[in-house]
Image (cartoon, rainbow, N blue to C red):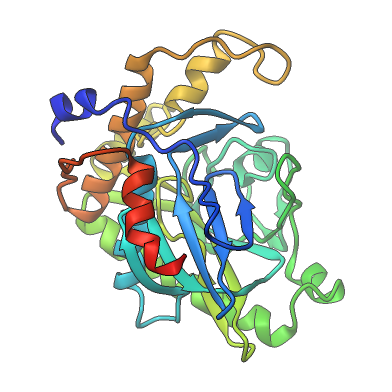
Length: 323
């Protein structure tokens, strides 16, 4: 990572990727989506960082980092299950098959970790032992490896709402998935996670947990969608310091994705107060986290390309054939 180049390009961000010439625009938290008449979907990853139910800031190269990281993993796992990718016309853009997204997020976990209300560590510390259809034994320590890899599915909540924990029985009873679909996504998710865990270990990383989204194509076939094993969808720890830190009762060392979130939360109540101006140095440091994650996960250097004009102008040029 060239930090001087990163600081020089700190203002070169993609905050909005609205392209009026493209049809059927859907504005997501991070991605701009366009549905083409022929069944393809264009997904443009912006640099927006979303937290506290709002967009906090635009982080230089975040969208490109997420797209490149997901591309690495899609290519590393293509033999396990089909994914939605058709092509990458731009570093921030995926052209994909349009899918009907299944209404269940598949979260795979190898460790007793997490901080949200749906995290198994939160539930465990509150005294619960039955969760997501699994029973965990007494006596587990924070961030300890689980006796076995488990799937903890949740509903897909609307933006600003909270995901709801589910069990396999509830998924089938509510008709969210058929028994065949549930078996298929579980098989795919566990195989994808095993591959991710294996490759991460070679890079000195522990793949702690991750979420997968699946959809069905026009023929009803289940296809991997969205992104895979990125810093936004997965938790990674550094293997070298893991055992010592856990033995001391400390949190494992990780990519600090919450760097900016923590900075804001230390200065206001972000759900009720105005967000203070975020210094450029905090934005640059957050970008460093994402780029470092990409380089560590993939073993590839993130090169900041020379470029005339804005990121949006480059994307428009690369997508002109779709107008």
